[in-house]
Image 1 (tube, rainbow, N blue to C red):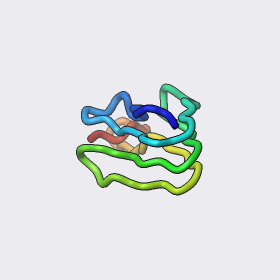
Image 2 (image 1 turned 90 degrees about the vertical axis):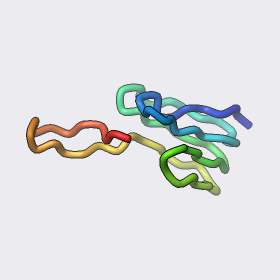
Image 3 (image 1 turned 90 degrees about the horizontal axis):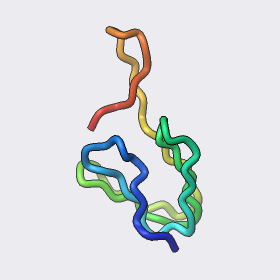
Image 4 (image 1 turned 30 degrees about the horizontal axis):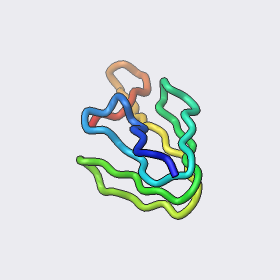
Amino acid sequence: MTKTVNVAASSTEGHFVKGAKQVINLDEVNETHLVKGASELVTKNHTSLKMQEDCLITCQTVYNPFTTAFQKSRD
């Protein structure tokens, strides 16, 4: 079982995975993590989610029509 891992370093509030067997950082730029085992995603500004099996967590991107590009969603 892992300690608490922040899977959204760019977030002002943080998004933390608790209780997973392993958390693997696949992409630091897009903040994509593979979470192995049952776990809980805990945040201050969103609903906490219990996951019963392995999952993939990545940062949400949104389209900005002013820059005509995708960018990370903000808290």
